[in-house]
Length: 257
Image (tube, rainbow, N blue to C red; front, side, top):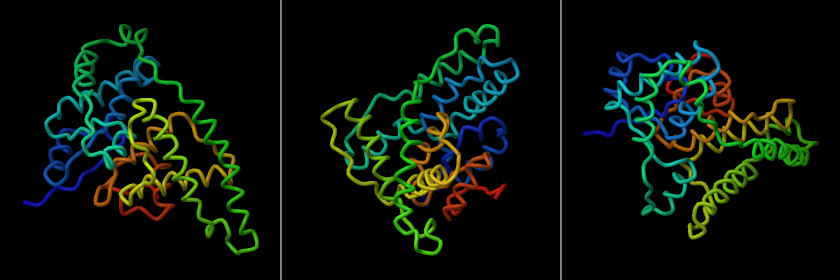
């Protein structure tokens, strides 16, 4: 019996997918939701913004609950997922049932009840500012080849991007447990993460575009997309970014670019 390919899903997939679609897709693929996607729904500002956005989040949550048995959940956060590649014995207590239980309670509530009990997200604006400031180093690296035609395209910055990912991953893991080994290199399974993040940082370096706090879920959800897996998103900018770094073969569907 062959192993089915995985489709790692973006948050936006769950807002409009139907049970019929899930039934059809799950016959050929494993539909995957990572713990950071569950947390994004659980802490979504849309829960308290207005009644209409609250109902949209409830719909996404309900889609997950109704199709619980057809979904594969990844319980490790992105950095723990990277850690497990070099420390296979690493285990942690799963938060999946916590989120699902919270979702079961939430769908029974109305907007007026929930809007003043919003679960806030961690403040990661410091990281966002730090990464945006790194664009100066990308410009410097690219400018080394100023005399070369199409120097921007020919100058590789993947080593800078890998260093940023590893620094942030290791800093977080060391805070969790100083005994954890240091991750020294991303393996080839992280191609989509590395090259897509690199493409985004290169955009920042040559335009007025800035990374926003809510971009981090989009980026780190790609940690879970390994060789042979697919990524499913309904967001044009995300899809086009992946196409721009010539990795469209990872996309489950391509609608915009």
